[in-house]
Image 1: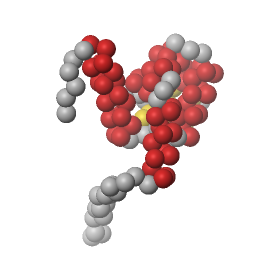
Image 2: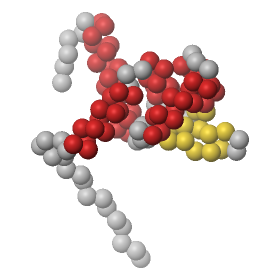
Image 3: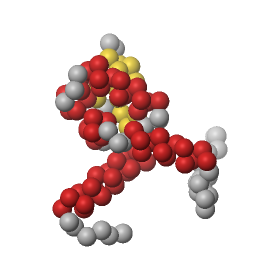
Image 4: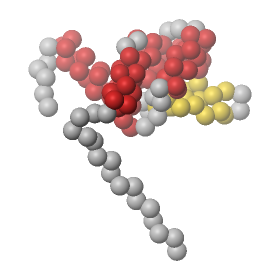
Length: 117
């Protein structure tokens, strides 16, 4: 019987490291594009190919592919080859939570609903 490995929880520093700040800024910069936000939103609960993501975002597949390349490089999405096509998904729950919270925040700003914790 092999022992079960458990991962120790990562602790966050009181002050973020330079690397953490740089990675966060990169993620926020990539979220500052309507096409990418639409594509990421579509990937919340589904895995989609480039053509499907282009349709959701209202752009050509070549444009969607360029956006996906940037999102992959930043670690926000990952792709998996399935036959002739590549299917994309969000890379982890943190990306999903970041996107969801950003859009909930936007909804509060637009609707006038008071902010809450």
